[in-house]
Image 1: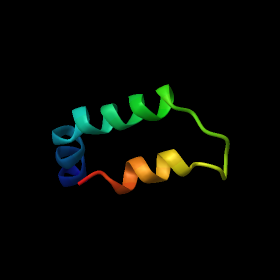
Image 2: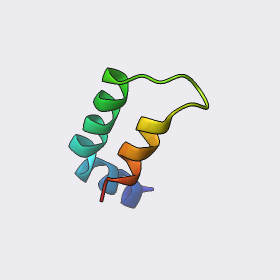
Image 3: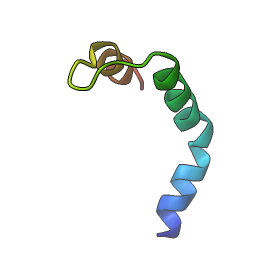
Image 4: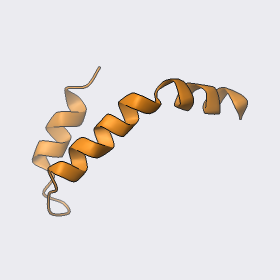
Length: 43
């Protein structure tokens, strides 16, 4: 469990950036083409 927490802690800024992006660009459920494209383009 500590390993997962360490990974998440190290990636916190990136994860928050994803969340902020998705909240700035909301899409209707099952019609999330921009969200899917955004996620797929992330390393």
